[in-house]
Length: 207
Image (cartoon, rainbow, N blue to C red; front, side, top):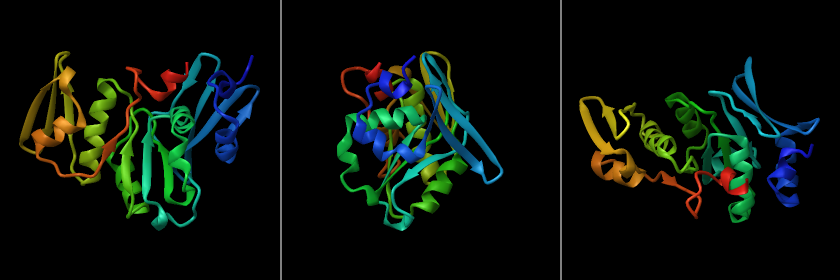
């Protein structure tokens, strides 16, 4: 069995650049997520199996001075991170100024607050799925970044967003961060990056 990086055709330069950030044991790739110094979980992938923690932070930064980081890229998984960098190696042109963070499947407001404190001068970029869940997460992260909680409910055709006493409803096929910002009147520099060609994720584009 070949390892997951071979299967996904991750380039040698990307593997070398991230080599200290993952382990490969018996063709299984592992990424370490930490919640605090006493709590951690692993994202693992081998063959068709891919297990991802619900929460925690897997952070890759090439600079030990967080205040120099100008761009932070947010993902749900470490594999998505590697696939994105494989397709967009230009984001690594200035390694000192970038950080990459996998948040797990169910990130929360505290994760974003922690990252904003750690990287006070950085622009944040959401690289989540190009599906409804990913687009809703884009909206949540944008609100969390500005210390605003956001609850959501989907009834199949409509997504309901609630912040304090304000409620907005969007058709599920119209949900996007741009539409959400205009409807909520939210001013933010948060950006989203989605794969071209109708793919649901950068990982899917490699499979």
